[in-house]
Image 1 (spheres, rainbow, N blue to C red):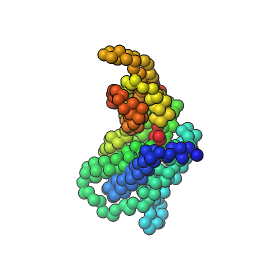
Image 2 (tube, rainbow, N blue to C red):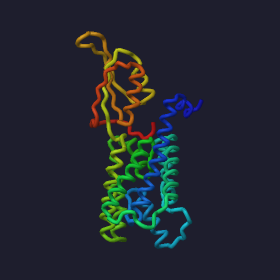
Image 3 (cartoon, one colour):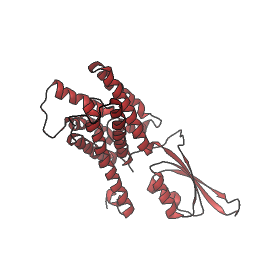
Image 4 (cartoon, rainbow, N blue to C red):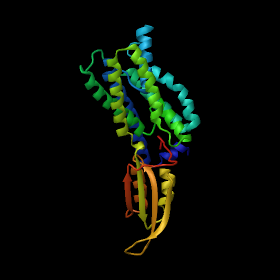
Amino acid sequence: MGSWGKRLDTPEKRNHMLKRVALVIGGNLIFAIGINVIITPMNLYSSGFTGISMLLRMLLVNVLKVPQIPGVDYLGIIYWIINVPLFFLAYKAIGKEFCITTVVSIGIASLCMSLVPVVSKPIFEDYLTACIVGGIVSGTGAGMVLKGGTSGGGQDIIGVALSKTHPNFSVGKIAIAINLVIYGVCFFLFDIQTVVYSIIYAVINSLALDYQHTQNRLVQVTIFTKKEGITDKVLHEVRRGLTYWQGAGGYTDEDTYILSTMVTKYEFPRLMSVIKSVDPDAFVMVNENTKLYGNFEKRFSE
C-alpha cells in the first residue's frame, strides 16, 4: 500500500482528508469572491502575489489592450504563471507532498479567480466599507486554505521554505518587501486614495487571515498519565517530539508519567484524540499562545 493509502486507512483519517479538501476548495472560492466581486470593482489592489497579478492584469487589459476571453478573467491565469517558479522551490526545500498539495491548491485558486466574474458595478459605494468587507471575506478564505494544510502560494511558499533553514524567520518580512513594491507602483500609477484604501484592505485581510491561521498559534501541553504508549503515538501520528519523565502522585504516591510537548492549535484536537485513545483518564494541562524560542518545525501539511 502506498503512503497515501496508509494515510486513508481509517474512517477518521478519511474524514480528516475530506475536511482538508473542503477547506482548500471553499477557501479559494471565498477568496476569489472577495477579490473579484468586492475589491476589483472598486479599482483597489490586493497585497502579495495576488496584487502583482492584478497589476499585470491591468497592464494587459488596459495598457496593451489584450482582448478578453469571454467568461475568463486573466487574474487566475497570471497568478498561476508567476507561481510556477515557486513550485520548484517547494519541491526542493520542503518535499514532494507539500509541492503536490501546493500545485493543486494554486490550481484551484487560479481556476476560481479565472471563473468568478468581476462584477461591472461595485456592490458597495463606500470605499471603507468595501475594504472592511472585502478584507474579511478574502482573508477568511485565505485562512481556510492554510487551515486545510496547504499553501496559498506566493510568499507563503517562500516563507515556509526559508523557515526550514531559519527557524525564527519572519514571513512578514517577505510580505512587507513585496507589498512595498506593489503599493509603490500603485502610488505612481494611481491617485493616493487608491493606495491608502488598498493598504487598509490589505491590513484587514491580514488580520482576518491570522485569525483563521491556527498554525501560527502555539499550544504547550503537559500530560499526566499512568499508562504507557502515548509517547509513540504522538511521535508517529502527530509527528511532534516530546519530553517525558517519571513522577509520583502527591496523594496516592503512585508512579505517573509526565509528558510535555508543543503543538499548533490546529494540531491540538488530533493530539487530544491520540491521548484519549490510550488513556481516557489522562490529566492534561494546556497553555495557549505560548512563546517559543528555538527550533520548532513550521508546517502546512499534516
